[in-house]
Length: 83
Image (cartoon, rainbow, N blue to C red):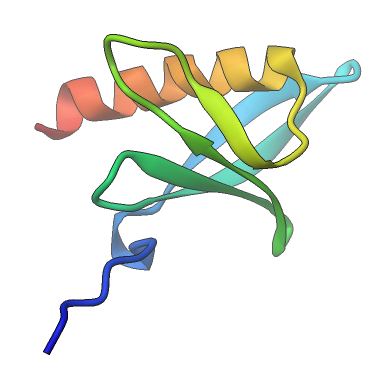
């Protein structure tokens, strides 16, 4: 039986980002392959691929570059303390 891999709600974390002159909270769900689902108020905004040595890339949805830069900083910060 194959093991199902997917986004892990038990590892989710929340970030505060600034966009369009207002701050908003986003929920970020990781998966084991380094992908992250970005959610705002229950709506999936997109999914990004993240590698610590490389840049962050949005492969599903449309996320602005400024938002992705902020996400990269938050993910770096989250995983520098998590492991």
